[in-house]
Length: 89
Image (cartoon, rainbow, N blue to C red; front, side):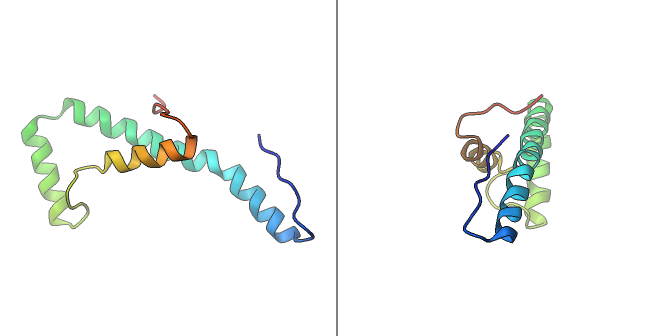
């Protein structure tokens, strides 16, 4: 729950800020779930399977130097939560 203080007479901005705050948690849940799924898959894949996926992603120009961009995703989650939050299971 968050408190949204009213701006100086800009009701549209107040409503937009309220919607943004209300949506924040649902926007954070998805990258956390995705991170958990990626970690689970990486834990069961062989080195050859990881290399194959990496080559396919590179060929599609989806990634350049990292198979899943897991570290970047973790950084975004940590900035959003203000802590080293663990992904939801």
